[in-house]
Each structure stands twice: as C-alpha cells, then as structure tokens.
Image (cartoon, rainbow, N blue to C red; front, side, top):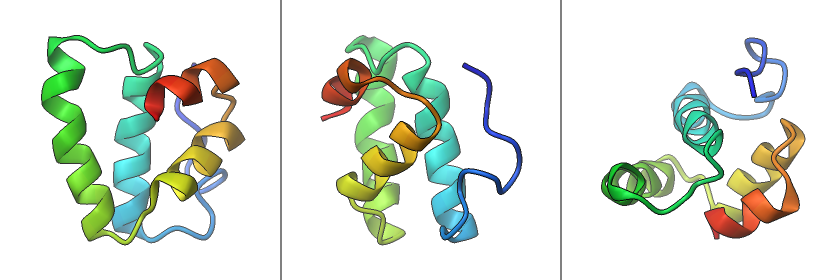
Length: 77
C-alpha cells in the first residue's frame, strides 16, 4: 500500500498527528504483525499519538480511510 497523497486522507489532523499517522500507516503495510521491530516501535509511536491527542479510535478511522482491512485493524488493536 502506497502512502496517501499529501493532506488528502489526513484532513482534519494536525501536522504532529499527520506524522504519527504516516508512520503507523507505513508500519501497517505489514499488517502490524508482532515482531521485534514493531514491538520496539509501537509503544513509542502510541506514546507520541497520545501526546498529540490522537486516540486509538481516530487512528483506526484514519487507517480504515486509507484502505487498511478489518483484519489489519484488529492487529492494530
């Protein structure tokens, strides 16, 4: 899955939230499989999301908007 065009799918999000979403989207290309790399990155990214006032519900909504499947979103949970 390619990154979304600039500011097309992330409308309504701050620049800080945009950066977190973009990184999560790229990691999600592997379906957010649990592995050493994602286990290391996800806690930091989710902490950045929380600091940017970006809830898991909004993250899921944004990821669904760019085409992540229901099964992929389940892995994100």
